[in-house]
Image (tube, rainbow, N blue to C red; front, side):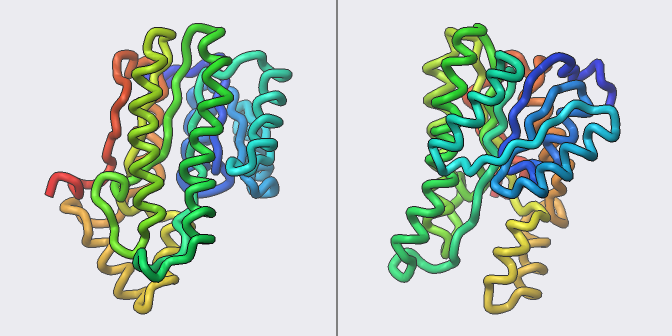
Length: 259
């Protein structure tokens, strides 16, 4: 990919859930395009490995541990970034979990609260703390990882479906609220992506191999979406090349939501 097309030179970007999967792919690609990337998740060892590899490839990155469902840790993350750089140009709220698989009547309150605390509360916390920074600098971009499940509900994952639908609507609300300050907010909605999170979901089903085959044939375009495809779509949405795109929930789904 040509750097001058999606140039992020000098931009400061925070990517949560970046120790693996989609978040890792996004962090690596933003760094390749010139951004100074804060690689963040609960798994500090994974973050440090990703950040070190980015630096080894002449990128700029730093690992910071943060549980996005913990408001105290969110505060500490943004205080640290402010001390380092004094600005945040890009926030990618990517961290999330799927939760336990069960129909609504059989699911636990503990599962509901855990999924919501990370998938929805964590996105809200991140935006709450970055928005004053972006207002002060009169610009910025927020990208929240939602899901096609937030558009077309998936039976057996009520908390996950509700949380991702909430992310989409929260993204749209914030986009409208802060458009005056040149702040853009979008959501990206992947379909079936080959990640550790998907592996966890597959292995929780009664027939993992059948589930894998079913998911691989779920979209009109055959196969599963790659993390690189999500990263490239994310790069477009956080770059100045999408300067007039805001309040969008973009499916990257091989046509799944069109049916």
